[in-house]
Image (cartoon, rainbow, N blue to C red; front, side, top):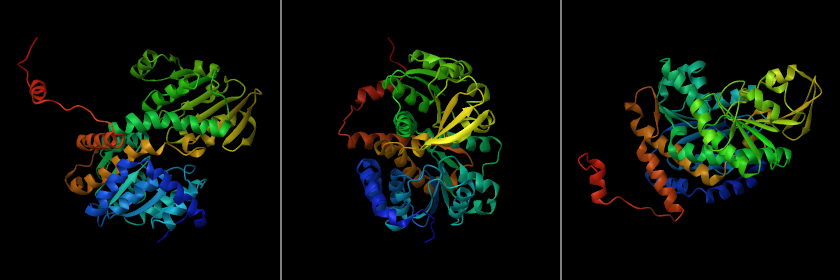
Length: 418
């Protein structure tokens, strides 16, 4: 087995943490138990490009239990938990290519090491495997049944490929499952982003002005968590419907050029490019903190920040101080990368339980249906979404009502009036 991790001697600590997370992932555990018996992924080679965390480790264990040959690489240079990567190799026999802090060259070498396995299926978090396959590794595409995608950013890239008629195999957009974005994006990102900011800075949020760029599911969750911590929250948006929703949810909404003058903490969660730019940095308060919780660090225009800076230094772990030519200081967290994974541990396991249950069941679905699907981006089948909801409620000890025969008939008819 080939692998590239920081240090295999870290495996014992990684295994403890993986098993701790597993205790809080009961839906995925049930799927793994079924997979062990049925082997729905037998003879399938699956290349996964995901954040290498304890939760991801339990997904990899589940896919392997289903009979798949699994190879894993990191989807972000700063999100890898090195002890987890070591344990995946030493304790679970999963080929892993991931080192926290790896440079760009190593990152792409790891992507291609995973693709060297000639996978039948891809599992992406940001669509980097798909991009490599559609660019430099086109010779491997004929092997591929289909794939899955975890993030909003990745789905945007894949739909662009589809719209241009360039997508070469079907993809299930796991991100679009209700049991993913309603919970993972909203509650997971909301909590873990604050966790990453606090671990990096140890600031007090109460009384601060907290600017959230983007009011999608991640932005909704983050804005609500920041408000719960006592911050005054400002939302910036480009979509009038999302902006209106933020207003109706009780947040102040304004353009970034105005928010930049007021904010103490700024977080981007848009999936877009250069959301915070030169003109915004130039009017920020002395000591403003800037972070990103979108997939790529392109949301913050770091080159533009560098150009208006006369001095920069590392202030503490994951905090870089930029002293601008106007004398004000701006603090950039985690090099603009995902702050919740770079300086913290990412989403809680109990919410990733649903996201990764979607991944596992979508992989099973793709093995069965992939050969019949068109080269498009598909939603997770509603049946899978509903089943994960049902299983999650069951593990929480919560029951719900069922429709009576009379109610089913009423909902299916048009005759009943006032």
